[in-house]
Length: 211
Ligand code: ADP
Ligand code: MG
Ligand code: MG
Image 1 (tube, rainbow, N blue to C red):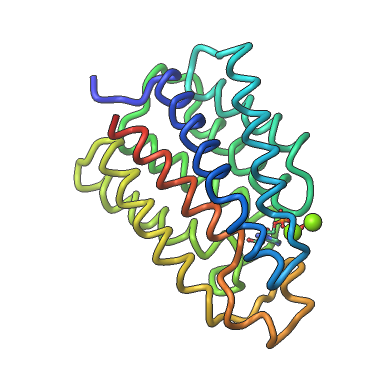
Image 2 (image 1 turned 60 degrees about the vertical axis):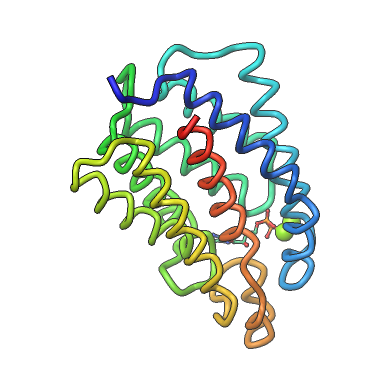
């Protein structure tokens, strides 16, 4: 079977924690420009907690791991992004159910459910200069790859690439949601920190899946 197991999801989360730690200062700087300079701290704290949690209790299915991540992120990240990322992982967990392994379509469906969770909770649409601008193209790319019969490794790699393009494309946008929206036109000219962290996480998940 060419699927992602619970162990693979745990490995992806460790890689996610590493990339967030490595880019902590960058995320702080991005959030200093159009927010309150805490996004790097928030994400680093959250993903460190995720790693500690999986070290003590590693659930048996991908869905159970994702649900645990949601709980940890909701209780440790704080800010706007904590509940949003928490909802994303919770919805992704629900989408994969109790499957033992995730194939390409399951990974694509999990990403889509995660994005829909963020959209439902944060009421942001594409172009509002939020993490949705990284997630939405990632979901589309993932679906296209899954529909073409690709497995989870390829699905994640095209999703990560699309997320990076989407995050980069937030630079000229004027924010319409979150703290950055308080700046109005002055929010233009900066990459959205949440879109950047989403792209970084997907890269880490993709690299981990590649093995
Ligand atoms: P806070 O703004 O509370 O300090 P963070 O700095 O951790 O929280 O996260 C900020 C990021 O959260 C933004 O860069 C943006 O991507 C995301 N965000 C904020 N509000 C929304 C929303 N309503 N919908 C989607 N994403 C949002
Ligand atoms: Mg902030
Ligand atoms: Mg804050």
